[in-house]
Image (cartoon, rainbow, N blue to C red):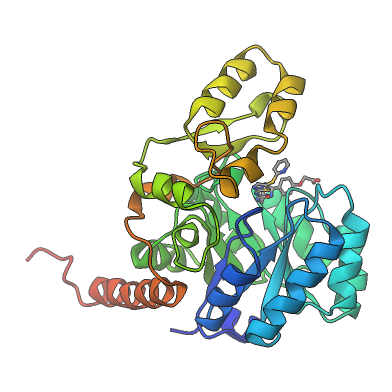
Length: 315
Ligand code: TUI
């Protein structure tokens, strides 16, 4: 199964990896790219010097087909963008803001820009600014999210823009991928599923927490701060929920600082911020990225075929 996204990005399968701060390093990104998807190194608040090293290591591991996911809230954003431009990174996704200011310089460097957006209006604005494709990320996703579901938003963005749309949020298997394609998406972005890959370098206790999660185990915290994030429930999320009700945004920001690193790198399952999508309940084993991708592709093809052969019609 090939779509125009494969041609646009020079990839075998229309699957891109979610840009997960403190999770998606050069090892995960390389594994996804080697398996035929698009792997991305997530900057989070990574220093620009570290990003340069990560890009170079990924290049040693795979050639030049790894992208970078840029957190537009980065405190050293200008320097991060300069690294991407100097290194001629082939493709970036962006989150939590508007990459407009950098679009021209990125295009000049030959970098494809794929903004991640939570609404139709933002998708249209990004297309006008020159986005090469759009990631439509529903509220089912982990981390910083908007309000609209993947199911409702994908067809609306597909109708509103003419660049390829990549659906994200709540997709972890071939059925989800088939559904996204049915809604008009040309590909999918997958995050949570790759947290439980063999090559993902996060603390094993966090992988275990995702494996044990069920459908109702995520919660959205931090609405009072203007940056709502979906996380797996734990002691920290319960405290932040309480602070949210009291509108103590400043205290929440304080508690949040360092909490993602504490979870993903130190394995603090109680007081770390364990960002994860609602689809965690579907993730049941730790396997290599290649197997994850090949199973998703095979299942998506089977799903689409079985919908085609009128097996759904009761005679
Ligand atoms: O960005 C994400 N997910 C993330 S980022 C993150 S780390 C973080 N750090 C500090 C505060 C909050 C989070 C963890 N997960 N997904 C893509 C995404 N983009 N979701 C929502 C948006 C978004 C929001 C507003 C995109 C554009 C936007 O535009 C506002 C504007 O400036 O016009």
